[in-house]
Image 1 (cartoon, rainbow, N blue to C red):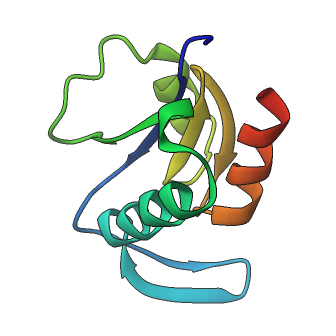
Image 2: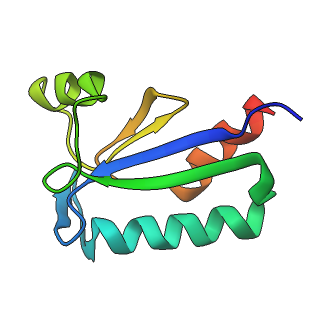
Length: 105
């Protein structure tokens, strides 16, 4: 079996996304991540992937220059990387991320 797909979600665990493009959410980025992780484990074989939430204020960011660059360019949190490639920003779309993972298998 090939290596697991890695999904890293970067954000601030206890902060909400707020309003983005006309839609507003009171959920924190941590809550969004928890719902996303639950969705993935129900819809994709958990042996195929691993996820982690990286709090940009609390966790070591030295291995994530590409995320720091994206934030400096104005990309909104949360940012989602698949296999260390930034794919999504400004929210967490469970279905879109799951579809991206399926295309890799």
